[in-house]
Amino acid sequence: MILRGASSDTAKFEQATGWTFKPEGACKGDVCIPLSEPPGETIDALELAQAMGLPVVTHADGELIAIGPESVGAHALTTAEAPDIRLPDLDGNEFALRSLLGQKILVYAWAPY
Image 1: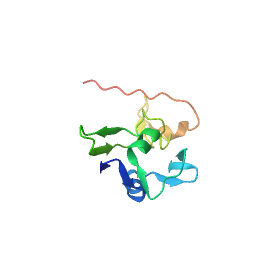
Image 2: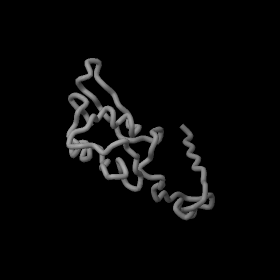
Image 3: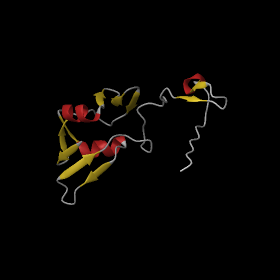
Image 4: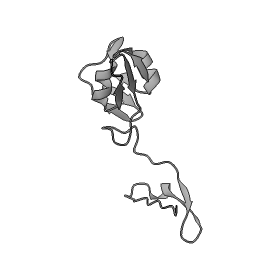
């Protein structure tokens, strides 16, 4: 989301980022980040993005602000669910990662290049 200045229309922020504002905070999927106060019709998008752990880049003059999507290194994930990955096992049989649901796993990826 790219803004001119820190103020943003709340509905536009929700549409651009996928986060919605509820009484429990800013929510996306099953994840909600508590906020000190619910936003009104307009929000300080810069302050809100920093509180939510979203990456923020500002232009030197402060007029343009880019707010990025959540990432693995942020303070919150939108989900902890891995995609349904299917790969061959050592014998060449198809193996579904989802079959390990509820167990801790380590996925090791290697490429010979």
